[in-house]
Length: 240
Image (cartoon, helix red, strand yellow):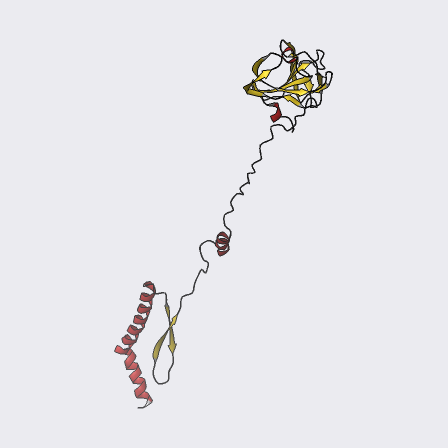
């Protein structure tokens, strides 16, 4: 085939139906590409013409879509890890230490030094050598010679100084919380007045012989402890 015939053939092809066939194929490729993008398949076709000396053809290359935003929406991973690794701290529980109750006689002292000749007995009757009858004894009788110094057994304020018909000269010291100590059978002259503050060892007076209900006993101090109006055993308060 000579060049004239080839040129005529091409001219006839493009002026005839061949032109419309090529135009249709191009439109079809563009339509398919638009349909794939609209369908959201996540791919984009790029049309790349390839030259070939033997024949002409059109190849399509699939190009993956580019990510426009690589940021991850959500809480940063550091915060999540920290929240998992750091447990909620609990408030420390304070240790409760139970203290032993204070002793009944933390600071009591003997008012005089001597042996106890007659003990406290508020429940049972015992023979009284002075009154010549059977009765209870509300305190303790501590042997001591007449004139022996009598001192306060515990810190407190002198509540009263009085003359009793049976127990003679009596000094009562209040220690608070309803506790009182009573010093009886004292000499008539005492060293304190009502309202005075005394400490353990402060001079109250001296051993006397003024208690008519115990006059037939050896020289002694009658000492008693009263709690809220009830006589208690003084030996529970005095040091052993």
